[in-house]
Length: 214
Image (cartoon, rainbow, N blue to C red; front, side, top):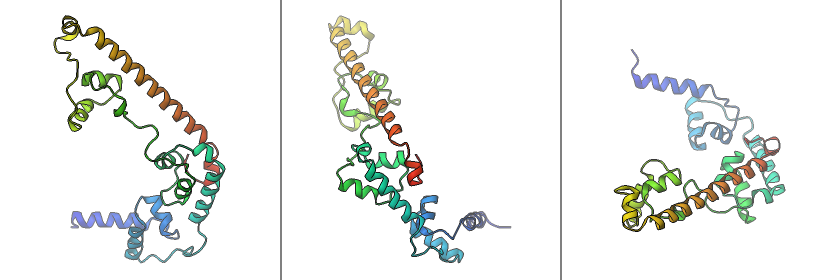
């Protein structure tokens, strides 16, 4: 009876044999998510022949050329995006030269234009639970961030409820801070929504020209 390890190996071999080995390493790497070196090792292990396109003007190179051409024609649309946003929205593989081209043109910016959580905008004088509600954070995320960054304790404590704030004469200032935070979060999510719509509009036509996902 075959061992579990042998069965797993046979399953991998069967999967690898089902791949189209007429394709080049770079194409198989893009399709499978593996590195080109790993694809080379698997090809060697299976004894698969070299791709007939080896050393030729491959589909990958053609895709690279088309992507560069499309990017050159759409610099205004791409301006201000990060490389990760371009990859996620347009599906350009990381190995394409389009990223180097956009960086050289000063079009790409570092980091994400719209981050998931805008910690720098949050008022940590407010209690963690209030920030969690306003900024739609996962449970305990604000607590964890405050602890990791060694931020001071909230200015207002909700122990005893709003009545305790009222008795201490802090309720009015607390309500103003909460309302300001709600307006700030609303502006942020409105900008994020508009940004998403702009990306969707900008993607029109790229799939047909470049042959990549939009």
